[in-house]
Image (cartoon, rainbow, N blue to C red; front, top):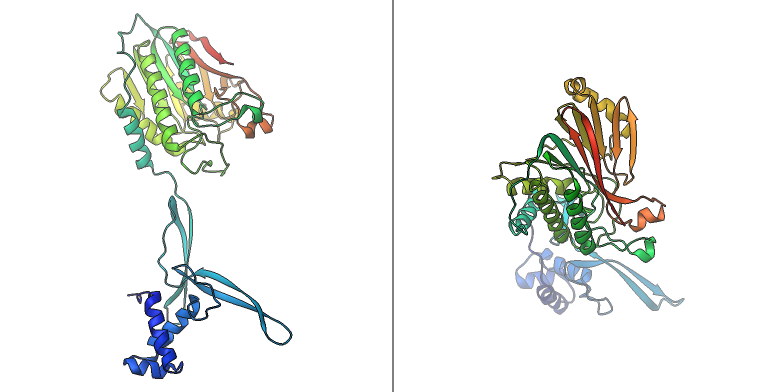
Length: 410
């Protein structure tokens, strides 16, 4: 059991007894019926805490004087002094708020007794359970603007795929700095909701709908405001606890609009490099929200790839930050061998690069899609220019790809 830390009052009491006995450790200790160490320890600690010499500064609790430097003149007279203060040995370690223990190093003497301990901490990673609780709380307070009306007559042989990618909710952009649009959480909430509503209203009344979320719906994954893998510092408008409910509200509102237009809806939410941890909570929250709805299914697979077979169509989806676009057709052919053999239309949808591109390789159309958000300072400084829009793709079960619906954002 560690020796209790002496208070300043107790130290000064023992020092006074030590001085009353001519600064003799043995005499002072004997007068109290204690061993020498009873006084010696107090005097040493008084020196460390700046209590022994009135010229020393009084040090904060939990610290001690580690080193003194005294300047003298040619005659040996003191002309100045400096004091270095550091953590006291044996002081209780308190974890900084928002941090987690990363590594601990201990120094022991020849007898195996620990003399010093060093702690290395870092920002605490997002707790998936906490994220899930926040998401569930956000969905609990959500109320649809109006009851969902019966779905109108739909073409059961058609599937509409809504591409939701790179929303980067929480991103902050100052137009004067970026040369583009201002962007913050409030603007994102309004613009994304308006764009989704317009997109859904213009799509064909397909019997099936696939909501394909391809990652980076959130700009930051936690309050650290840095990407997890690369450590890039992000321009974030506000708190993570405000950004996360905004995403869940937008997704729920979008799904409500979509299921009012299509007889059956499948929802897929894949992670990006900005929101890998939060994605787990978002899709679990959405699953709970629709758990009693027979016409809405939420996929909770942790696989970064998604595959969807619809008649002669094979559709793949992934964020695009790891697998390279030229490699995606071969990945599709290897993972979905039977579907590859049985289909004639094969499309792969990706995000990540924020640019509208189409590559046809081996009979597979590989798309990357625009982001609907304004450019932040980093992308503007690097000259990454691209338009903004949202898209939906419609496929026929027997005749393949039929049309694209796109809403451009100015």
